[in-house]
Amino acid sequence: MSWPINNRADSLQIDYHYIRRMVGRDLGFGYNHSVWNDEQNEVVQEVIDEGMRMYYFPPVLPAPFAVSAMEAHEWTFMRPTWEFDTVGGQRIYPMPENFERPIGSITFRNTNGDYYGPLPFTSAARLRELENRQNYTSPPEIAAIQPGESAGDSPQTLELILHPTPDSQYQLSLQYQAHALRLTPEHPYPLGGQIHGSGVLAACLAVAEMRALGQQGPKYQQFLERLASMVARDRQRGAQILGYNGNGSADIRSRADAREFDAVFYDNVTYGGVKYDGP
Figure: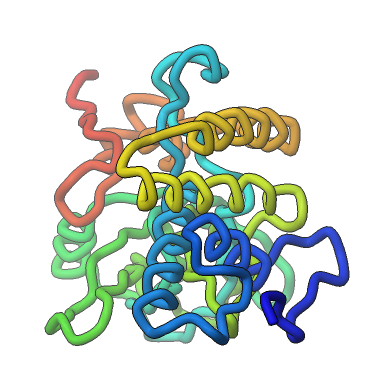
């Protein structure tokens, strides 16, 4: 039997099972993955992985597909919000495993619902210096991100540092750019919902075409067309940031603010590659 009995589509949502069938078809393996050998199954999974990476972190669109020149789009659906509670006396907190970088500042409130001013980011080195000079507890005022320890046996994660050390429980919230998750039978639904399913499929089929032909062909052109359409839709959904926007994530409104908080850093390196040293 060439068509699988299980995992039939029952809606317009494009999921892993549908993508796997289409990739297997284009590679000449047939629709039914249960009759593929181990190598064929691995090749299909590699194609899907590569296609997902290409769609989640899309290339700069060339003419005539480009919305504007030299812009790599960042999807709104890859900007979740991290919410967590502080613990009195605890300064460092593990960040989500899929955390890539912050978007904007941290907002927070106490358990009574009283809101405090946003927490801008500075460097971890700056916070270590402040801790050595002023080690006390209070509502936090600034934050930093540092890499966590790793021996290479698991993916390295990041840590959030707060200063001053929280004196009580506060409810913190931060929007962030996320890493992508792998598409598998256990996690079959791509990010972005139904609307982005066709774009994800187009990316995977473009990769399958490259595997089969050894070069880009019509499927890659179809992927670019679909990508341009999805970028336009995502802009309508509310994406305001295209490409890398390190400076904006600090919520810095003046050079005085930047001088006070040393711009935005990942440890000792600025996110935007810019330091303010003027008046």
